[in-house]
Length: 281
Image 1: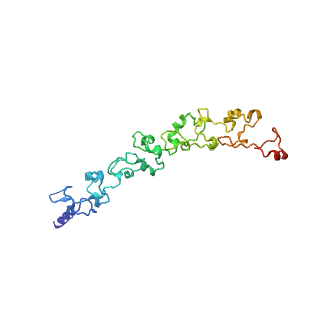
Image 2: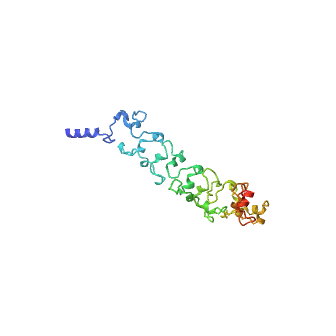
Image 3: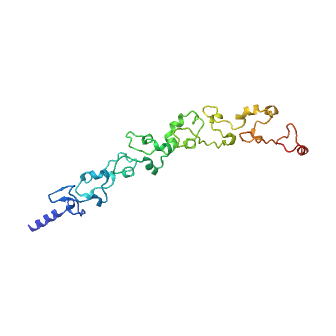
């Protein structure tokens, strides 16, 4: 009998909350009964490794503590919350959400931690414009190059025809991120530098075809009317070369003019003539 009494007392003395739960019963229970009465309890969850803030503060204890062994409850998000994103953004909800709300307040700042920061027009678009899925909450990774999202824009553009003219599919070479339209002033024209007299804002001044086809870089291809219309001196009648750069610079005024190749033309300059008339201009 004595042995049974000892065993019974030991069993009654064991906490149902686990052997490592070393907290005075009175912090949660009242002598009136063993039910947990929150308004009478002095226990604070802030004393644990998982303080209850935001929406966690109003939850019923058993929402997380499925058993009375409280130390068995996990503190990671996915142990309580189903991953509706289907492992496309990881299982740490706190990367995007807070205990206050499931609403993501600053997607742009959050995107700074991935391979495609949202800048310019990309900062204002809907997530589902790029991350397309049947649920709209599965954010599978997408490509980070322009053509990954804008292939249809590239293929369907005809003025100019990007495919026909073999334009780069790196949209950023010509288009900026800060504008709301595809209009652009960023064009790599290094094959024919647009400077001085060639600094022309209207592309169609030279590219007469609607598809902006590649045009000749020879002067006369654009300046035939200038050549034919010049009368002082008359370029056409005088048999001047139609390679404008032999005499002209790319200055907007066609000046200064440098004409030094007088040999074999109208008057052969000799050393004596040069002394008499001065250097040619």
